[in-house]
Image (tube, rainbow, N blue to C red):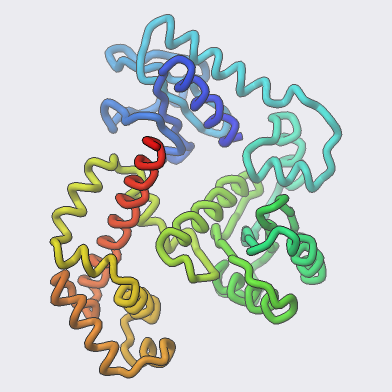
Length: 355
């Protein structure tokens, strides 16, 4: 139901100017319209109704699943808006039209299923549940049916296939201790190769990770979506994106943009900025990082002479002061590229808003 909560919070912000921050059960920020006044606030596990901690200047709305929404303000007005938000969330399930099992799973993964039906699904799939959650996104919508049919031929007992119109198919692969795959990413590569060989279509496989409880599926589906978003931002030519590979971007995206800009300024100078704008050098750097800082493997995979690769790495080092052959410098370079992408994306979005 996370997406519906976000829609309600955005609506309240637009209509009343009320800022809010939504926290997940693990304390991570799921959505916000403004920064918290301080970051060391802890939720009261004994509170199940709206409350306003003394001296904090905030209003807390506890929700099911360990989610907490904080309105940045206190008093009767904010308590009233908290009640309105809660009523809007509880009213999501008013439309009780008949849904197929696939419809329910689709709404459940995207956080849009009403509480009653969600409970029904949790009861149906209760017990031990291990699986790989993958979202496949095709380049053309008319291939989705073909993709779904192919996945049906691969389906085994316990697997779930959930098509999303015009976007892709979530494939939840049931697995156990004796499973042949080493990891979710290992399975993703196998799946990608099978689809490409059989269907001759390009898909993107986004890996959320290994799920151990059915109740965790929506959060892992969100990870798949974020993996695709961050992957397209950083390495758009890749076809397999794993959420764990982009956790750095997720962490940095939670930091105020003003701070990110300052961090970027400390890492880069004028010559370094020119390197980041050089697509040829950046592609080389990305491939070098992708091939575990191995010069021979990178030059072979890029069909590039070894000396040409070394020349380009030297040019990057001269401009940025970072020798990508060394692990610590490679990590710093990855941080530099991520910061640059986030800041530039934000700048482009602000420019679009002003048009």
